[in-house]
Length: 388
Length: 108
Image 1 (tube, rainbow over the protein chains, first blue to last red):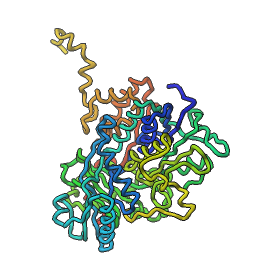
Image 2: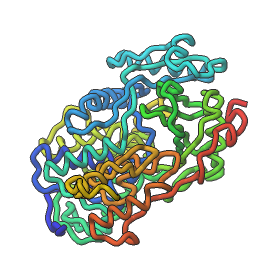
Image 3: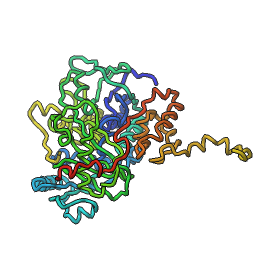
Image 4: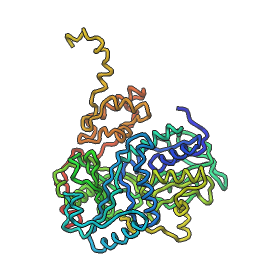
């Protein structure tokens, strides 16, 4: 295919955040949109993630954004013309301490005030949702039915196919090497395949977005933290029919409709010696497998005889407050960030639409300005108490 | 194939018959599905894996990887050796959770 030397916008990163941005830019009428990925769509964090989305956050902005994402996810298969494997049966949050129960109650109060009908569940209700759950040491449960999961790879590819239909040009195995700039604005993108003239760049490179921004001389605090995850062989569906989540110890597990159980956790328990984490490479460790199968066989004793078929890792994009970094650089016109703060699959479809609307229409229905990273220079951090 | 010569029309439809061949037995993906997506640009093993789940089952691609790489090569004209062949992930064989579980995890 021939190399296109000019574009109205260049999107960097073919994960959920970037692909949804490119799709929505074209859908809103932008003619020449090019998307670059150093590997392929869904090769980074999106294709490696836990597949879930939720509105059950502990901060107002995240709850508003999460709720918009659920609305969006419920319509996506139809909008994109490809099945994304939607499954909604809630996150079942489990508290192993009284302090966590108190945190749940505060979260529920805030969520309810913003129109998210989450609620505490009794032990019997929790067992009805997930009959195989070991409940003896759990102090409290809460749940919100419309939270759920979808197939992240299919969702990413469904956006890719829709983007292509809208005229977006996808360049895979193409890495950004630098930018052409004036003192005030971005003018072009240099890549391993060639140069592209453009006045608008959207950096949606996830954990690598800090490094991409540095190529434009911008110091934006985003770095990587490698998390690990495994999948089991497919088994009868009711082993884990709701998304199980705990903050302390931090872990999650869920079962996709085709039967495979997916479970993961953050690195602080199985490679604490590496903290504080600033990872650049993927990698799998045996310690993780021992640790998390230990957790899973405790929480779901019926999984003892189920086999793990695959373990892998993915890169969280970490920001100073673990919240999104979205907006146009104050000091470099045309240079946009669209980084989720480690929730790219979940927030991507809405974040992509929000950024595209802001670029093409000059306004958007969500409070996009709150996510600008200039908040850090002012000493302002977004707060959410529902993050592990 | 003795005795089949009378049914030349059917025999000629070999290409179509071939399409029903199950390439990935773990996830029951046919050659037809692979052939549908390669021309749409899903021309590496990992892209087809993420799209169709080929190689995600218990055999982890042992059965289908070579067949799929050959098919990509046939359709795109790129030599097999130059096609990204996909990541091979641990464990080498499926392993029961009770064998790896550190007793109780954090719940001891």
